Length: 134
Image (cartoon, rainbow, N blue to C red; front, side):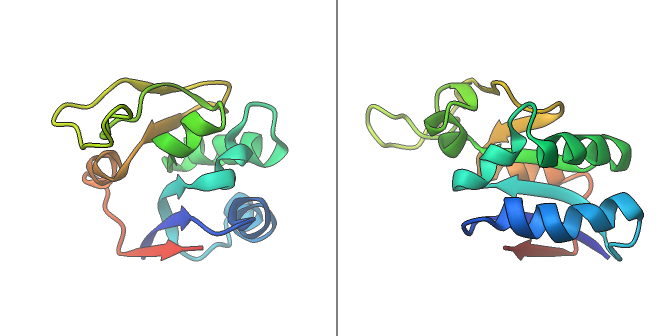
């Protein structure tokens, strides 16, 4: 079974990912193929360059071809991205027809920044069977 994780609740990345999922991925005992991880709110902080969980995760993600993506607006608000919200005009609050530029800043290797349309597109070639929100 292929799964994608959405880290949306407080401490989901630092505790559930860092203390449960990541050690299992490193040991090869997780039991499901993880194809993607999407990070919201303060969960994006584990993707900072130098963060012990983030550095370990980046290594595993590169080895296992796991998508690592953080919410553009969450990352921008926390200084982990540069640019503008990809699909929302911050001046008007209206949706965009064409994406803006937003790129990771000071994150571990391999992290992407985006919103739901970007997540769907990134997972389209390797879709999960289940999406699990933590």
